[in-house]
Length: 394
Image (cartoon, rainbow, N blue to C red):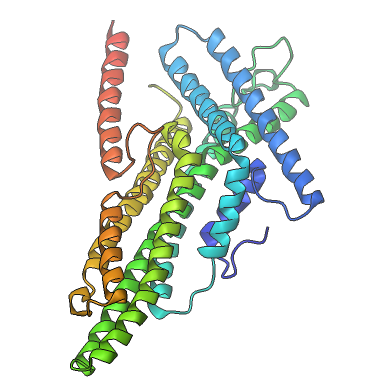
């Protein structure tokens, strides 16, 4: 599938990461085999990562700092496996959604205002994706740099791997060390890619859906200007007003169809991603940097998801203001004028029930979700910090 006619950076990166995971459309049979191989490799990397982490936490049980660090690694891998499982379950719906998105959203635009709206959306997507990828790569690099720095000055038999293996093999000796080091780092980078790829795509799709609601509002405002100009120029001509009402009805009908399409699209998006949205100490200096970048990834991911979902909610709700602003009161009470008034009421009533993505059907995701999660996370962090200090002092 060749995505994007205008070569948007964010979509190129999002599709590239999804291809690495193995969950993207294929143009032919050979490409489909590559996707299947990538998916098998992804599952293998996740399985190896979880096995190493479980064995490591078994042998380090009792060390609070190490257990917390390993538990976080296990949680990341489990979240990744959970997301991929859910998306694979809805694979057909997901692929159909991608095809529809490329055809209707990721296409060239000709209206200057529409181009301006889409360009602003692309800029936000590019900034979010680049920052998140940078933090993710920094996190993965931290796992690689930590053992390299720690191994400076050590004997060959005492070299340290990114993760402890706890096996009866000379893991510090060549070539075992180099092979195991490469396998572990490849797993780390693949888990990192899997961890952000779905959220990247969801953020991009949400922001483009919100842009489509903005474009719909722009079309309604244009309809408003057209009616006002025509009414002002031919105010006393009843026949002309009737003709104006018919033109308004045709254009409003197209806007209603676009609104229905966006509402239906949001419902499909909700069906696929609702469960995925729900699934959202004294150390070496290099590990501290890795943890800080990791924290940046987590909060950046959360902000991207909640911001894009909140944007969909706001723009879908603003459609009611746009439709109410048209001068429908000046239209004659003929058949077209009556239908337009009924459509205005229906659109306003439907817009009051805004489109949104929920977390497992429990609650709508918005920026309030981000602030609530951050507040709760800081409370837990303070609790863990105090517990760690008390354990150290005792």
